[in-house]
Image (cartoon, rainbow, N blue to C red; front, side, top):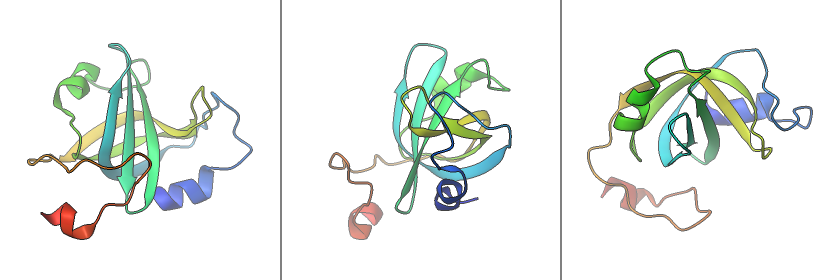
Length: 127
């Protein structure tokens, strides 16, 4: 499902902070930001078109080699995420993954973006 469909379907006021559903979803997007918080937690911002979602990856919920994620994923990579939607402790809409699959690695560095600007000029993106 696309990130826009995911947000439309599951991002509502019924979900409280730290609350995750049991229904599994699959989503694909480009990594725009990757933040590690220790060895057991990674925050990934996925972008698809104009829609953004946070991936809240924890070592306990992950069904594979979690250390592999730390070593291989970079900004600009396209990944597939399979997990459950919900909200993080801060209340941001997130997906807690059981599996992350790298679909395409980014071979050239992406251009820097301005804070809060999730859209990128098409010319700049192709250059």
